Amino acid sequence: MDDHLHGDDTFPCFPYFSTPPPLASPLASSDDQHSPPLAAAFQLASPPWPCNPPDLSPQPMLPAMVDWSSPFQTGLAVPWEEETTVQADRNYGEEGGSGSGDKLNAKGATGRSGKKKTSKPRFAFHTRSENDILDDGYRWRKYGQKAVKNSCNPRSYYRCTHPTCNVKKQVQRLAKDTGIVMTTYEGVHNHPCEKLMEALAPILKQLQFLSQF
DNA sequence: CGCATTTGACCTGCGC
DNA sequence: GCGCAGGTCAAATGCG
Image (cartoon, rainbow, N blue to C red; front, side):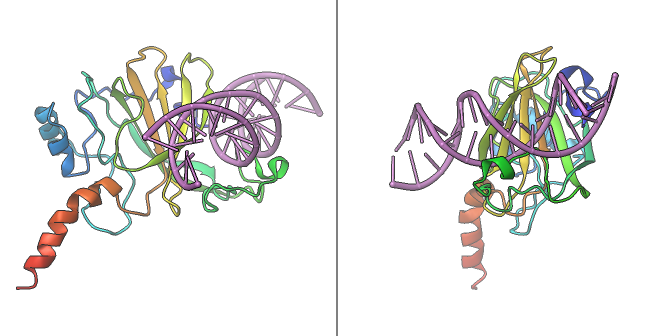
C-alpha cells in the first residue's frame, strides 16, 4: 500500500529540518515556553499544510498544539503532504466506530461495500520526543496497535474522538532512531481544535463584550 | 460508571 | 490462488 509510509527506512528523501513543524495555533508559542526560538522559527517556515485559523469553521487538520516542550533536538518536518488513495466507504467512523456488532461481517481493514477509492489528505512528520503522543489540541482514542515489519517498534492507531470527525493518525517510533516519532495524520478535522477554542474562549468573550459598545 | 487502552481475531489488498 | 502485512473491530480490562 502506502509504501512510503511503511518502514522507517523508506521515509521520503526530504531533509530533516532543524525545527519542528510550524505550529498552527497562536497558543503554540505561549505553550512552548522551553523553546521560544523554535516558535519563532515556526513563523518563518512556510507550512506545507494550512494553519488552523482561530475560527469555528471546519479546519484542515494539522498538528495544531503539539507540545514541543519535550526534549527534542532535531525536529522534523513534514516531508510531504499528499493525497493518498484510501478506501472511501469504510464502515466505521461515521457510525461512531460502533460497528454493526457482527464481528464476522463488520470487520476489515477496508470497506466491503465497494472498491471506489477516494483521496484523503495525509500529513506526516518526524519529531524527536520522549512522548509518543503529541498534544496537538485534539482528543484521540487509540483503536489499535500493530507490530510492523522491519521495525521493532509497534505502530499505534488513533482516531479523533469527536463524534462527527473521522480523522485518524498513526504513531510510530523509527527503528533506526527510537528517539524520533513519526506521526501520520489522515483526514481533515471538521470541528475546531478543542484546546484552541478553550483557550480562546476568554478572548472571544471579551470581544463579544466590547462589541456591545 | 464512563471513558480510554489493550490485545487477539479478523478482513482486505497486494505481491509472487 | 496463496501467503503476508497492514489496518480495524470489539470484548476485556484498567483507570479516574
